[in-house]
Image 1 (tube, rainbow, N blue to C red):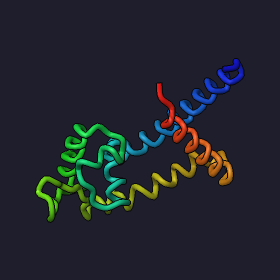
Image 2: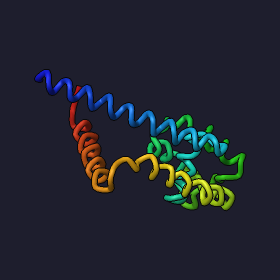
Image 3: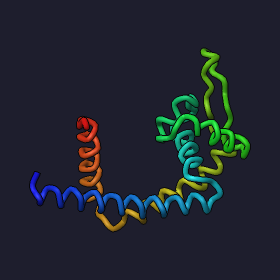
Image 4: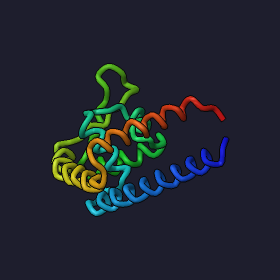
Length: 148
């Protein structure tokens, strides 16, 4: 490993970390200003776009520990945003499903969230966004193949 490789890897790590931190802080603030926390938003967004989901699989899809899912689902259910639905074919499986009230909430919130993301990413062109997506995806996939 050369000094140049080391410096560029460290710099890339710092740049990616700082960009992620700023974007994350902005989106979290927006979400919290609308009365829910980021984890609740992630669950609602999943159900809003993908439909009902088995409770056991929600954690993997939004990168959350499975033990926390029950707490988040309980909170969203108590607010009337989601409901639990038993599987017709397997009694061991329970689904989370967005309610009409949850859909109304997300119909209002999600377009504003999307608009904020467009604004946050507006410093780079559409072509640069495509390049960034490909490069970060390539980086993420390559890291999966490394073993430490």
